[in-house]
Image (cartoon, rainbow, N blue to C red; front, side, top):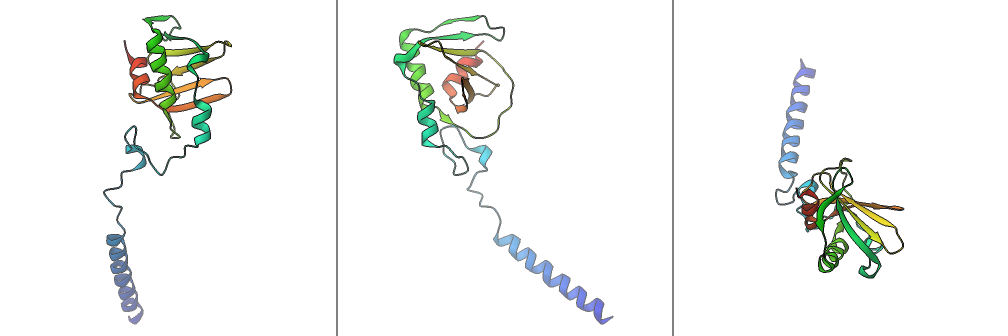
Length: 155
């Protein structure tokens, strides 16, 4: 009988301590979870190396053309002017590398940046309004670029 009373007391004290600990260690409601960070905001949980951002950058002088292709690889009917190409290069260079996982599927159009040395960067959408995937020879980046994502998702 004494053992049962001691066990009940230990359980009651443990439960009370656990309740106090849980009450004092609740997550701060002002800190958003990692997946709710809005585009353009920073998160301490993400790792973006300045070297990677610099490596990702492209020079307007090296760009030969930018084409928009549909899912079948045919021209999507939109031609970019010299000014639009300049703007797209600026937007691409400003895009932040995102290290979160993304789904590997293609939705919408595909943008192809062709350089004077005939190398290319394919920019694809997986249906996100804010994120794109840029890939080329020896590179693959998941980028936050709402401007380019919008172009890729246009009908």
